Image (cartoon, rainbow, N blue to C red):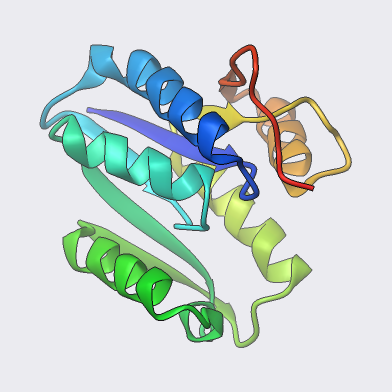
Length: 158
C-alpha cells in the first residue's frame, strides 16, 4: 500500500486544472489500483482534482477535516454536494478537534495529512508565503518526500 498526501493551491484557472490533473495522474499512475490511498482535506482546486484522480485509478481516499464546521462553510450547493459525494466514498474520515475552520485548523490539517502519508504531492508554484508553502516546509522538516506538480503554463487566479 502506498499512502500519498496532497497539498496544493485552490485558486487554479481552468487551463491549469487540466494541466494539474494530467500531472497528478502521471505521478500516481505507477501506484494505481487497490494499493493506492490518497489523503486530502477536499479543499477546492488541487485537493479535489487529486481525489478524482485517486478514485479514477482505483485507489481509496481518506479525508482529514480541519474543523467541525469545515463543510458547513461551503456556500455553493454544487460544491457542497461534491464534498458530500467524496465523503460517502472515503475509506476513513479524520476530524480534528477544532470547532471553527481557521488558519490554525488548516495548518493542523496540513500537518495531519503529511504525518499520515508516505510521501506528498504538492500542486505548488513555489510561493513560500502560501498555505501550500507551509505544508511543503513542514513535510521537508519531517523528511517526507515531496513531489511538486506545477507544469509549464500553470497559473493561479488572482
